[in-house]
Length: 488
Image (cartoon, rainbow, N blue to C red; front, top):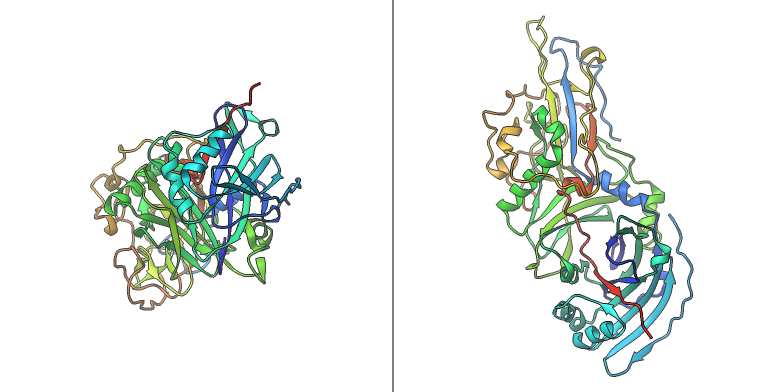
């Protein structure tokens, strides 16, 4: 969460490794005190993930000869800190240039805030304190030390966490600080990276979308009609779409969602309420708190061990896309377009054209709703496969052109012969409003629609982070280090 110079960083981490004491090491710009650190309930992370995840929706075309009207309307629509023993002392660590600026306990974490004069001294101090850090960590520590960063070291007491199958789900941590730069330290996590990894960043800010300032930005292609077979291959489909997007713009960070956090259309789950916003930082970012309207931005990056920089964020103008809106009288909204407010999402639709008789002289095609005529045959378009965390989706086997019923101009993909027949054009009375320019990182697109032709509902669902990213998601913010038991 971000406003002005204040950042509230919330993270949920899993740990796999020896069941001895271990720690998270996170660069921060200032010395943190006990009142700035707290643990959070895990449920709020799942809620945020569901809100911003790509959607698979399903529509049935209504009888083109039925009277207008009567169609579905759209679906527009914390735990406190565990108290510890705040010591709050500054202690020089002789000869190594490392200073313990503060230390205190929060939940299962024993937290130490360090500053260091040089990276070799910090590396030596961590090893002296029996932290088993990966070889080659010192060069990754160096740029943070040279920039004046402090180090948030959260040692975990393994007796206070439950290990299942060698994995410990840790209590989420939240801390806040003030800094002119809005960035996310990811380079340090490369020390224990096994290779390419995905990072999902969700940003909440009052009436503001964000993108990265030091890498290319693109928006994921959206509002694509897909074959019915995608119902059981949505994870694989989205992985192929994401891979193709990155192949088109290597090194880009992909915007997957930018929308008012209190609304959605369609809604795969509950929206974020005032209590959720308070939990995630509205209580400390400024006057008004959760009473203001927040924009949720979801950014998706994929990077390997050659990634050179931390992610730096900047405010970005509003965009719209991925809605059941009609432009130019007969076409649904395509791509991402500039707008005053943010209403952009990764949305994909299975459509069932009308196959019954046409008993009128002037049928009106393209009127969609979430159930077949008379309510029969209703099925929910949803995230269909099992949603097991860590499930790896097949990559490289699905052919996008064969699974889409509409072209993807941003990627140069033409719906192939294996796709379903062209669907009837959308029809409605919405008027179009011209919008100059194009959204950052997106291909040129038609003018934005000022109003929808109608607001049809849908059956919809969203995939989990692990599923949609192919199971390789790591919140690569931290360096995990096991601390060996001291021996006599």
